[in-house]
Length: 487
Image 1 (cartoon, one colour):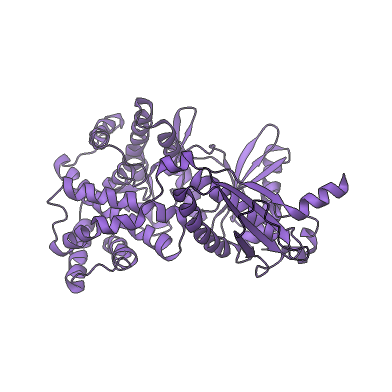
Image 2: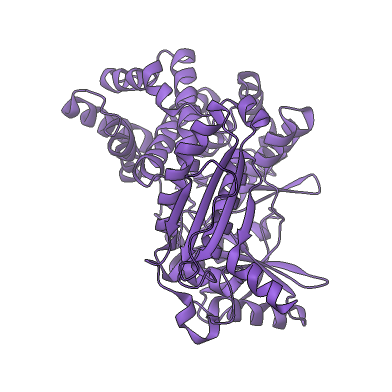
C-alpha cells in the first residue's frame, strides 16, 4: 500500500470513531521498529495512530491489550483498527514517560512512588494476567527458553565484546554462555514476561502510570522485568532505591487475590542473574545500534551501561559464577574502555556560547553566504535522495508537511542519510562546545530547496535540540523568498 495512505487511512479511522476529522497530525519520531506513529488531534479529541505492516505482531498486541484490560491493567485502549489490521488508533497517553519524570524531577519521594505504582501493576502482569495468556499467540517467541537466553548472550558477545576487541578464550566463553542459558531456562516459576519493562515504556498521566510496548512479551522469568526496571542504564537508580523496590515487589504480591507460592531466597538469587543478563543484553543492543549503526542515542547510552556493569561486579563478587565471562566483563569496565564513551561535560552545555545556523537552499540559486565572517561550516547535498517533488500530490507541499515527511522517512534513504549527517556534525559540535567556539553553520541543499533540504534542516534542528539543548536558527532560503513574494 502506498505510504501516502498512512495519514489517509488513519484520518478515516479517526473521523469514523470520533465523528469529526482531525485538525492536526503530528509525526512521532521513529523508534527501532517498522512501526510508524502519529498523533491526531481535533478540537475535542486526541489519539495515537499506528501503522505496522507485521500483522502477526499487531495481532499479539491486540490480544495482550484485551487480556490486560480485562485485568484492569492501565494499557492504551484500542479505539479502532483497519480491516487489514495494519492500521489502528490508540488512546493517547501523552508524551511524558517515567524516564522523563525521573530526568526532570530527580530521585524524589514522588518519583519513587511512581516506581512503586509500576511495580504494583507489574505483579498483576506477572501473576494475574499471566495465568490467562495463551502463549502460543506470542509474537517474538512463546517462551524465554534456552535459545532465547543464549541469543541475548551472543548478542552481547558479537555486538559489544567483540567490537571492543577484548581478548579472551572464545571456546571457553561459548561453553559458559551455553551452560548459563541452560541453567536459567530451567528456573521456575515462570510467568508472563513483559521483556522490556523499563521507564521509557511507562507513561505518566495525572500522576498515574500506564504501559506501552508489551507486544514482545512471552512466558519467562518475572525477575527479568524487575531487573529491567531497576537497572535501566540511563535511569541510574541509587542502590538504596533498588534494594527498597526489590523488597517492595514482595509487598506488592499481597495485593493479589491469590498470593503465589515460591522460594523467596531462590527468587532473589535468580533476580541477580537476570540483572546481569539484562545489562549484557542492553550492551549488545547499544553495540549494534550505536557502534555499528552509529545512532547517537545508543552511543550515549553505552557509558552508563558500563557504569551499571562495573557497579554490579563490585557489589556482587560471586556473580557471574563463570571464570571466563567474569574475565571478559572485568576487561570491559576498565577506565580506558569507558573513556571512549565520555560525553560532554553538562556544565559546558549550559554555558556554551555556540550559535548554530541551519539553512535549506536550492542549488539553482547557490549555497547560502556566510554571514558570520568565520567561513567554513557544513554543506550537505540532498539530491541523492529520491525527490518527492516529482510526485504530483507533493509538488505544492514542502518538507514541513506531514505527507512529505512520511514519504522521505519511509520511501527513501533519508533516514540513513540523516544518521550519517548527525554523526559527522556531532564531532564538530562536541569540539566547538569544548573549545568555546561561538558559531557553526550547517546547510542542506536540493534541487528546488522545497522538500528534501527543508526536511533535513528541520530534522537537524530537532537532533541538536534533543542532544545538546541548543536552539538552532533555521532559515529556509527558498521558502522565505516565496513568502516575501506573496507579501
